[in-house]
Image 1: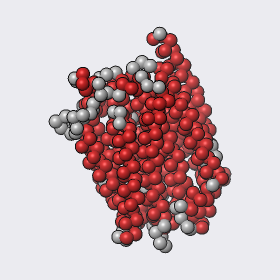
Image 2: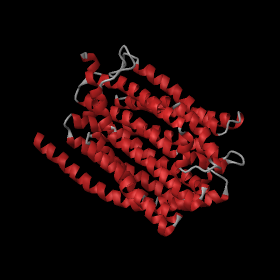
Image 3: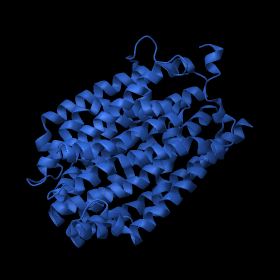
Image 4: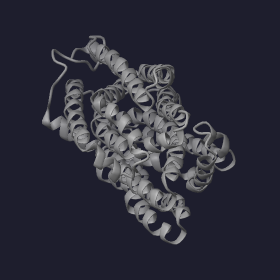
Length: 458
């Protein structure tokens, strides 16, 4: 690579004040991830108000959450790992290898996205019933997922390249593309759902169409010769070594989202058993509202990721610690705000999604119980992401799985035996406390490790 190209690398990541950097990188990430959450919320809000069938339709969409989580898992396996790897390579000034990551992202997303879509489309009906669908809500789940699955390659590429844009020092553009998809989706949703009478199909069509437009711009961006990371002569490429490294880094969030798929499947089955179809719809509403705050934290994660990865690659442990603790502080503030809404203002939040009195009652009650320990969630999410940012794959994987598989799944089985549907809701705070304890122990060890590495380099 030429000196001119090297000069465009984001060297500010090791020189600028940490607070300023986190603001510059996290604010666009927060806006982008909040917008991404609103993207899903808008679909649910419109679908929940479809005349006569809104309550069942929103329950049908809730049944698709496990499939969406599984699709997200595959996307993060490629995208999150690749963006983290690129940040670390740029920190090491290894521009040649960093440029080889981009075509890998395209190839892996296309191949894995195609395999996932074809398999799910072939077995969609039994899969949806296995994930908790009933005869009443299956048609809505099917109509939505057929279109979403048909566009999964587009979705994967869009999110993957968006992460690469952010990792290479342009978080504002990544934010802008996400905002475009949200705003355009909010405009197209009522047109396709109500004006054209397409119902849940219309929501899915609007989603895929908006992502396709943003994806096109992303490809054009990386085709420009002005960027430190860009496509060469070919947009597709594959390196087994890069694939293994990036997917190894992305294994943590992949397993976390895969675990989320299993949890969503099991909770749908438990809710259907103890509360019926509307209980699944209530969970769908709660999940959408809580997801908004989680995505804000993920935006903070996105801001922390290139800063932590780059400085770890550059051997600057002190800066890694600073950006971590600052990220934990802001994530905790977000969680406290969410807690206030969940416990004291659940009614207005639920009313955005439905006018059905029974569904509203279930959702308000469940929201209060599920999120009673929400203030500690931010610490765990940021801490898990830190291990991932530093390439500590096994520890990231363990923390990713601890809350959902090790603690939450057993709680979802045992507590309802004693408390019925109340036990389903209470499973979440119980697992949160246990996972928080594990995270504290592991993060203390990591901080000591970073401090020792500083002393050895001085």
